[in-house]
Image 1 (cartoon, rainbow, N blue to C red):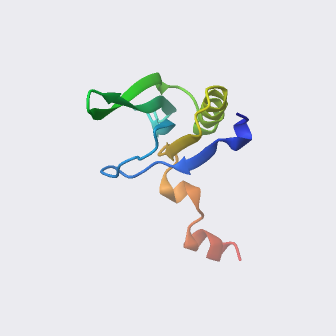
Image 2 (image 1 turned 90 degrees about the vertical axis):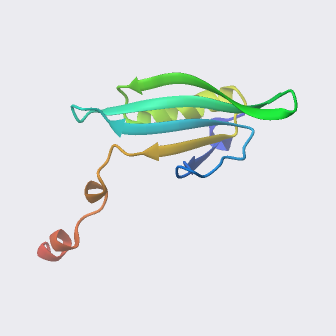
Length: 109
């Protein structure tokens, strides 16, 4: 599988259920010093007896890595292992930093 074939989708909100049999999950937040840290997991469903269970392999936890770098690594890893989907959540950028404020855009006109 090529990296370009891996779909990158927003992670589900807490309480929502994933239905994919196997996927990667990349989540980035800020640590107590304000630096980005990322957790990367490979999640797969497995049949145990008559039940389906999630098997989670944490490939990196609280790794000092930007979200973009972690996402690039996860997509490459997924492609090499035929994992079709990478879900991602980036909480390392404050909402006000992602988009210019209305006051700022008005003042610059």
